[in-house]
Length: 319
Image (cartoon, rainbow, N blue to C red):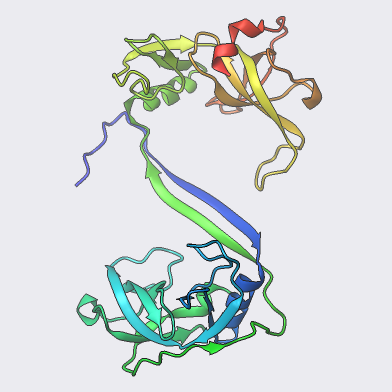
């Protein structure tokens, strides 16, 4: 059982999500299109090993691979683990086993779900077959899952040219992580201070470097940090980049500037958006000050403070 956090320690549910869009080469295109057509394809290497899922280059020799073969829809479980509490987006909504299945004709195993009534019904070496999804679009989810199926292994893969009508040429792979974040003592104090329009760090008792946001320990010296130090509110742009691609759900017009900002008194720079100035006028050494969000909980962005630019020697160690 995990320890109960202190009452003043913050906790919050967080979601990290990134829908990754990619194009497919000829091998991956044939593999996913084949799944749509209830056909499993592997690829044969120069040494005769059949890989599934197929790859375009031999993982041992880097040789280009194009020799596609059709495999069976039955196979053998090589190893497994029981999943008693399926999460949203997993193949089955009821408890199931994660299994590695070596399909008949393949030399490597495919990871997927096995629909079984309980862990006592799963074993290494058991025979299984593919249960196809009712609606298939050209994705690994076209295999709904595997199910137990007694059969005799068939060992000979059949050559396949990889040609299908209306091939799948690209996919969107959603990556998502749901978790509860507890920032700990140091960052809880940092977040509470932001609510008072203050920025605090912690000083290392050994090297005297002030870390913002604080980490609770100095990563260089390996000692705990407890001395709080208020820094800023003004700071210096050390480096920056111009953002030209608009992020989804972010109401900021492009182009805009995202920068490393060394707050006065801090021992390293933190990230922040620069506003109140044309993007092409932002520069290293620009002195800036925070503009707080409407609810006053964090700096929404930083704007020029009107001071002369900082000399390079004053921030060169913070690049």
